[in-house]
Amino acid sequence: MENEISFKIIGAAIEVHRSLGGPGLLESIYESALIHELTLRGIKVQSQVVVPVIYKGLKMKHHLILDLLVENKVIVEIKATEKENVIHKSQLLTYLRLTDSRLGLLINFGTPRVKEGICRVIN
Image (cartoon, rainbow, N blue to C red; front, top):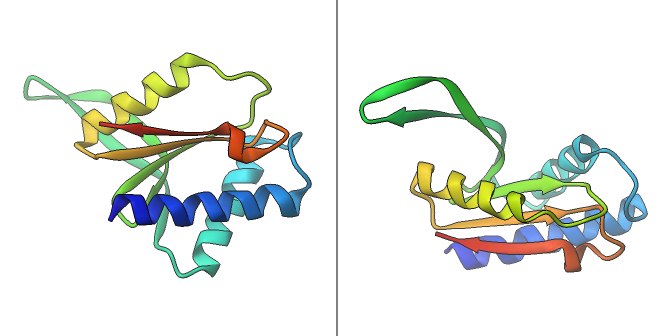
């Protein structure tokens, strides 16, 4: 199920990148466009999803915020950076573990070809 969803997300991301003309825009613009593209394709997407963090039974004061949660299955972390940073993959893996999710996509719209900026992260 997650693989099928991720395939659809990647297709939508490629369309967004192509339509907006490639890199150079703010992350929030790519996020809004991707939400719209996924919605147009009939795919359920939630943005800026607040997830409480529980540590040994204590609900922490601060929470994490997922960029996108697609079909309640796949977490999408969006970036618009020129260079890849290893911490982004680690961040997404932490999100997957804390939400007990299996698959996440890190999509960096800052690359000349967005396909090269997509990384699957598996929990």
